[in-house]
Length: 204
Image 1: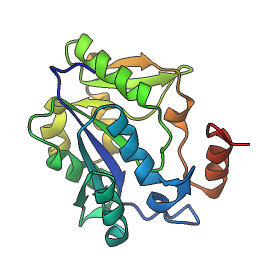
Image 2: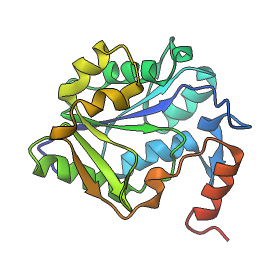
Image 3: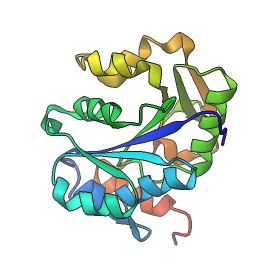
């Protein structure tokens, strides 16, 4: 990973899991909870500053997050939706970071190689606004977002979500092809979870 560039990561784990029969951050797959998978992903890719945004049932998740070596940040406004958690996350990343990864907790199986490829691309392309991972012609998670956009994210009213804001910076954004089907494999429903378990390496 390029040493001259400082990266952080934000994991969004504040939601209600309303479409899932269980609480997503603590669902276990392959012996680890979703939130542990997400933290391990960034740790194994060399990211030291990892912020996990909590809200609903935060007291249950915070000890898990801390044991996995991530900073837990409570979003008191989590009922307002995901964008409020993004704003809480960008406020908490280290001031020295040049860019940050953003990953919802229900996309738990992204490969560390994807994170590394995005980091290298950011450094090689003179700090684009956003680096999006691309698999089979479709973008996925986690985007790597230039910290220069933090002020805009904090000041935006959230209309249309983060995607609407990032569209304004499309000209200075890039896509990075990766061999990682998991960038688009989220778990919103029990059916999604079953599919993830079947796709997970080592599953029978």
